[in-house]
Length: 114
Ligand SMILES: [Zn+2]
Image 1 (spheres, protein in one colour):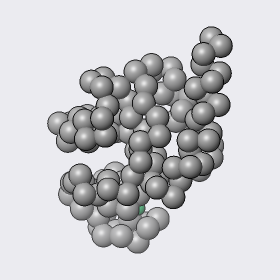
Image 2 (tube, rainbow, N blue to C red):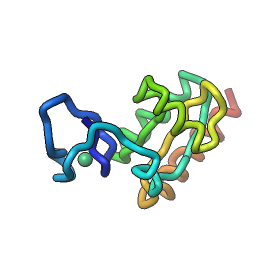
Image 3 (cartoon, rainbow, N blue to C red):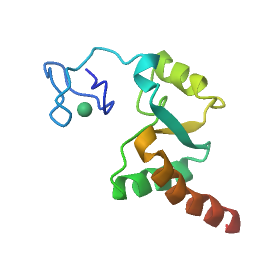
Image 4 (cartoon, rainbow, N blue to C red):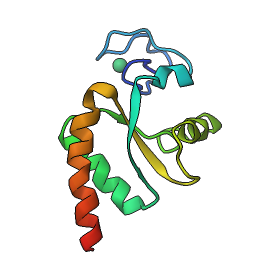
């Protein structure tokens, strides 16, 4: 079960997202992601871990299709957002996009130094 608002996955039996108070749905569709923006894309698993911890620390909700969802649906989302095969794509809601991009800009820059 998924929350159409925060895209969190819940166990079977839970009907309403405790955070958003939204009715859960069996599957998310592409329409559930219209208000989401791609803020980062990487094929580097180490970098992916860093990005996740940065967004977690900032309290920004993110969604990584094809990572959170090991499914054809996940791959479809990734493709819809223009990701290359095997790349992790970070999607955040439009309201958080600017903050997330600002935070991740520093990661991109520091990565070049490596
Ligand atoms: Zn929710």
